[in-house]
Image 1 (tube, rainbow, N blue to C red):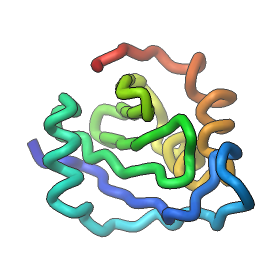
Image 2 (cartoon, helix red, strand yellow; image 1 turned 90 degrees about the horizontal axis):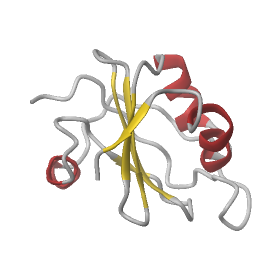
Image 3 (tube, rainbow, N blue to C red; image 1 turned 60 degrees about the horizontal axis):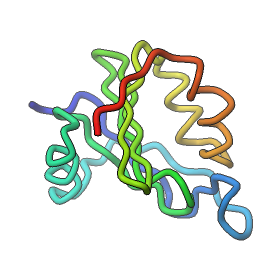
Length: 118
């Protein structure tokens, strides 16, 4: 399955858990390295390209499918959750948030229907 929306974030993104302030992530249309696609598919993401979150102590990777408005979040403990009916603007705010972890907790975690997929 070909992913419908691809993005990457700056490795300097800050979720409030890392030391020091981070830079604002840049949303790009560049395709992720093949290893990321294979890793995402191996984790049962069914075509959602997962982009690593570098500076978080809790978030490992995030991905989004704009045709189904599905946000997928992988945590460093290995759990993966899929959130339904997430508007694209929420995903964009999430990946550009100064603190992705804080944004996730305040704006996504309990605001959207979700299922644990791993």
